[in-house]
Length: 380
Image (cartoon, rainbow, N blue to C red; front, side, top):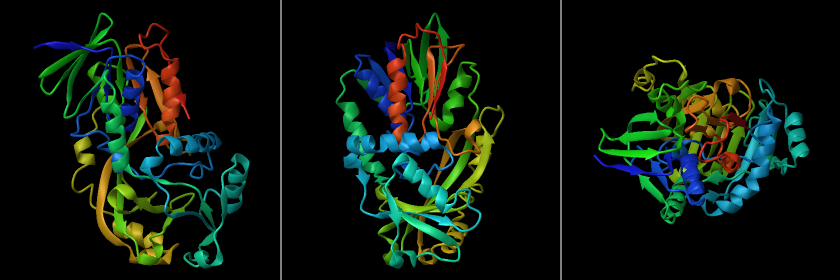
């Protein structure tokens, strides 16, 4: 069996993996991008909620809100052909059980310069005034993940130093004499490199266990997002009710409908991905994936009565990943880790799409030949 050599191998062709591969290929590195799915951006990057964060969603993490807002215009400029802004996005604050008051939300917007204004009287009638204290129109678009996938594929194909292999399931990885050997698809192909980027999101610890590396402290969560058809009067709106066990219902352009998610009902199961022995199959069984749409709809309609008329189309299920240290706060950092025991391996856990600019900064500061001291970096 022949072995092909690359300067860098990137495992995982979601949004973050594809961008990392493209960034390195533009630095005259010969890059191999491996994806086990039939196409790029085929899992979490496609099925997660389509929000392009502008900072409103993080009133309890000023750093995350600030970075999202700072990156928003840049993201809209870079990916403007992949976003949908043809709806009125409303953030509503309940009178009870919200961790953030409407006053605090407005103060956050004022402090970091987020555009907002109160909805007009007619629009406020969409809400139950006994439950909703105040509602704001904001500037926050939705990403069209189908267009983003096509755009990313076009960008990758234009790079002569980048090779993309889909349907590439990593079987084994071995480190010897400062080099990493990888084999895919039952040993059908083998590759050698001096640097591997592990950008497999919820599968990140599976890769680390192949080489006996300490797993990252990550919580995995089986999450359901319902695809729904909105009643006609509500189709031009997106709703985010926060901050607590509430919901979001906003356009999902790639699916041609709206998505409905709920802080309480979207998570079906969770587990500590750093602990060995978890039977992931039992967590993602058919029983675990029985839809909770009726619970989401009924609770959402308490705050926006018109949502009682949403039509259920189907559900998507995806395993999400979040650093355990951020499980109970509002921060959504990326993790960019050069592993001390195996500095040839860099693990990157992505977060919000706009965090790609923080990843670019980390890549700029990284010695691709890993001659510098290894380090672990967490960037909000």
